[in-house]
Each structure stands twice: as C-alpha cells, then as structure tokens.
Amino acid sequence: MKSILSGLSLAFLAASAFAQNAAIGYPPQGLSVSPGTNLTVQVERPNSLTGSEEVAVVIGLQSCPGTPCIAPADFMGQILYNGPFNPQYHETYNPPYENFTIQIPSNIATGTALLGVAHVTLIGAGLYPWLETLNRTITIS
Ligand SMILES: *[C@@H]1O[C@H](CO)[C@@H](O)[C@H](O)[C@H]1NC(C)=O
Ligand SMILES: *[C@@H]1O[C@H](CO)[C@@H](O)[C@H](O)[C@H]1NC(C)=O
Ligand SMILES: *[C@@H]1O[C@H](CO)[C@@H](O)[C@H](O)[C@H]1NC(C)=O
Image (cartoon, rainbow, N blue to C red; front, side, top):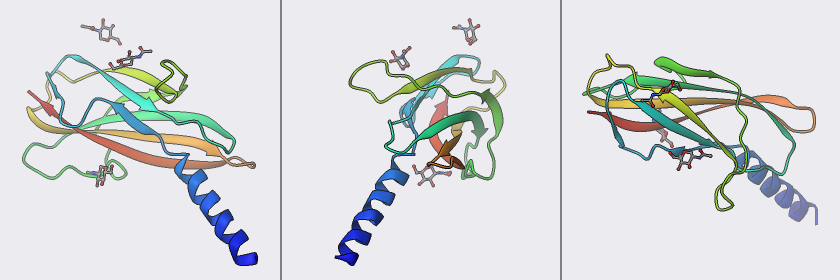
C-alpha cells in the first residue's frame, strides 16, 4: 500500500513538474526570417494543476552560423525582450499563450541563429522560484 501511494505521489510530482513547462509555439524550427523584420515569438504556458504565478520572460537571439549554438542557459545573445509574461487563452484548441513581437537586428549575420527563451515562474503552495530555458533554431536569410 505504501509503495503504491509513493508511486502515485511520484507520478503526480513528475506530472506537476512537467506541467510547469512553457513551450515555444511559434516560430517553427528552421523558419527563415530577414534582418530588420518583426517576428512573433509565441510562448505557451499550459495550465498547471499546482498554483503558480508568472514572473517574466526573456527572449534573446544568438547568431551562430557555422558554429554550434551555445545553450541559452549559458548565453542568451542579444536581448530582444525582457519583461512580464501574461499568458491568456485565445483559441480554444491552444493552451494559454502570449505573443511577443521582436525585431530581428538589422546587422545580424545570415545563417543559423538561435532564439533563446528564459521563463521564470513561482510555483507550489509556498511559491518557490523556478527557471527554465527553451530554444528554437531559425535561419536568417
Ligand atoms: C515592428 O514592431 C514594432 C514594435 O513592436 C512596431 O512599432 C513596428 O511598426 C513593427 N514593424 C512592422 C514592419 O510591422
Ligand atoms: C535546444 O532545446 C532542445 C530541447 O528542446 C535541447 O535538446 C537542445 O540541446 C537545445 N539546444 C541548445 C543549443 O541549447
Ligand atoms: C499569435 O501569433 C500566432 C503566430 O503568428 C498567430 O497565429 C496568432 O493568431 C497570434 N495570436 C494572437 C492572439 O494575436
């Protein structure tokens, strides 16, 4: 009985930790964008079972043509957005999200670039801080 219960609570913990994850809904992997143009970055925040309070999102862009991109946890590149995160329901078939409009720097090199998203949230009954980083590869052309 005890092991079934702890198995269940482990599964619940794993599920609720997973439910904290945000995701990049747009742009799709490999999207081609031109320097100087605006790009929508959609950050999805699936509704979680545990209480949570959004803090912030940072969006950075790293130019990495011909070299491996560095993980955004270590290097965000040029910061294009740094501010509040307020995900909302829009379409019924999508999780809550917020669209951010960023401008691709006009002097960025062509080739591979990595969008990095850092997401900070407060979770749990006691509200502890939690940070995750997400990324999406795009092509500057
Ligand atoms: C790009 O976005 C900025 C601010 O978000 C806006 O002022 C500007 O009009 C946009 N430019 C285009 C071409 O949509
Ligand atoms: C980008 O995110 C994926 C997981 O979605 C991860 O496997 C990959 O290592 C990340 N890339 C970088 C450069 O951090
Ligand atoms: C958010 O951006 C996506 C991708 O550009 C677009 O399809 C969607 O309609 C936008 N949602 C809102 C509420 O503007």
